[in-house]
Each structure stands twice: as structure tokens, then as C-alpha cells.
Length: 256
Image (cartoon, rainbow, N blue to C red; front, side, top):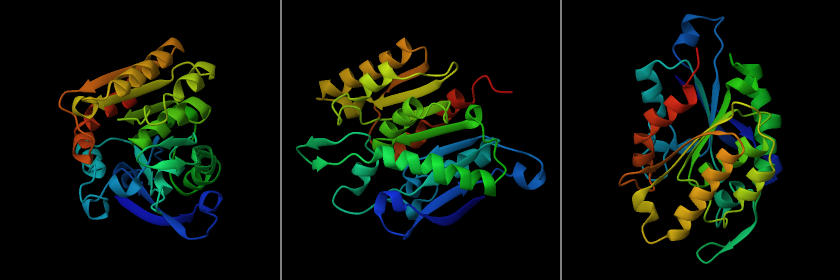
């Protein structure tokens, strides 16, 4: 079951217009009122569950996968900032950067993560049957959302113990994640899944270089990293949906 409700993201937008939040509850929640569940937070909520809400008409189909596998997991997926010209890029970047295609982008990723951890998460924990501790709180996203997932597990490691970063845009921000990772204090048992599509990398040697440097920096910090180059992988929801069984196994690994 997926519920939709709205919550303002005023620290980011300066407006009280509600942002859509999608909340997936496993069927076990209805059968056992005393049950409590881990929570996976996801970026680009409009692309997570429903094709009719997705930007390009194709979602990840996350709810169908969770229903089919009967995973005892909640998913909280927040819509992005759709405002032109670069609302999403700005909100999903921890760094200010300049790009030939997008121009100057002001990084507001810290503002967004402060809001998610200090306002949204407490609201979710108060309203739903969550296991609120760090061990049971994870984060996932693709592209700029993948970059933000790496940033979240690095700089908000007190909140998130596990992350999945699909096609993370580490090259777009010129590899700035690496110094953050090298300076971070990761708690023992931190887990990261990260991948990139082989087709995405064609003709872009910097992408592979920054992806590899990021994965290596995490491993050198003692993080348990699963890193993949997806054969014939593309930069699209259809491909990211195909990776769900793999990154979910990593997130759920070694759990009773």
C-alpha cells in the first residue's frame, strides 16, 4: 500500500506549497499492529512507484517489487524540486558547481538533508510503525539522487547506516565527494551499494575515474562497498528498476 501526503519544504523553497511524499507500507503492517519496520528513504519520489507520476512515463515499480517479495520494509519517497531551470539539480547537489549544459548551479543539498533528517524523518517516525534507529534507516537514489545518497551516508552517517547509489553523478560535481568521504567519520558496519551503466560511461573517461575513486575512498574508510558496472546499463528508470533485486539484497544482507 502506498499513501500520498504533502509536507512543505520551506527551508529549501521558501514557500509553504506542499511537496508530495509517497509512503509504502508492507502488508505485514495491517496484519500485525505491533510490527515495526526499517525505512528506506528515496529521492525523486514521483519516479519510484507509479508510471503515471513518473517524469518520462516509466517508474521503478518499487511497490510491485516489495509486494512480490513480501519485504518487511517501509519506503518513504519524496518528490524533487521541479522548478526550472535547475531546481532539482540545486536541491540534489551538496556542492555549488558550473557545467556547460546547466550553467551555474547553487548546491542546496545540505539544506535538503537537514530538512529530511530534522523535519521529515521525525514526522514519519511519529506517524508510522518505523524502527527509527540508525541501523534500520537507509537511503537510495539515482543520478543526482545517487550523489545525494552517497552524501547522506557520508555526512549524515549518524542517521543512515546503508545507502544505494545508482548512476551517482559524482563526475558532474568534479569528484568533490572524495574529500568529504576521506574526512568523514563512518560508524562500523556502514554499507554502500553503487553502480553505473556501461553505456552511460561510453566516451566519458572522467565518469569511470570519479566513480572508481569514490568507491575506493569508501573502502579505504572501512565501508562495506558493493560496486558494479552494469553490462549495457543506461541512464533511465527502466535500467534502475532492473537493479532493484541486487541493491535490495545488499541493503537487507546479514539481517535477521
